Length: 151
Image (cartoon, rainbow, N blue to C red; front, top):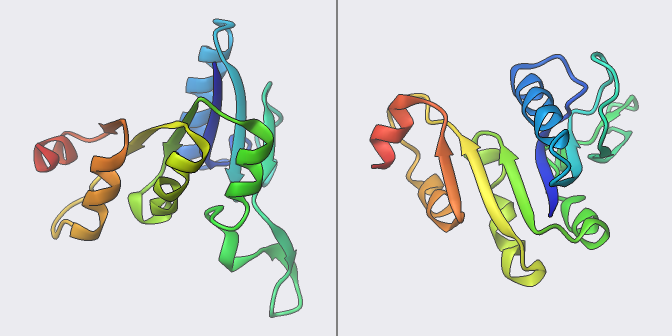
């Protein structure tokens, strides 16, 4: 089964990065998955992983410095090109919903199932996020609070 992870870079020292790295490093050992990742904020502070990592777009920013491009920091511009290469069965996403609402619009065109691991931190609940939660084949609330709010 081909899995495309869509989340923070597994090589970055951040909470979501460490979760991705730990979970998928363990799952990759089962041999059941061919894993790829569309990696946001791709900086190598933790070292390489065993799967292919496609970073979000970087280049010369408006301030003249090289770095992450604002319009692709969560991968919205580069995602479709990676879908064409990987052809995943499942897109697995770990992020806040506002970062990844765009994933839904590609599901039908590229025939993948979408699994979201996400949170809701507190009130007020952003009602704009509910369609993205409902449209995924599976949404896992990673906090008890979110599970209660989503019902």
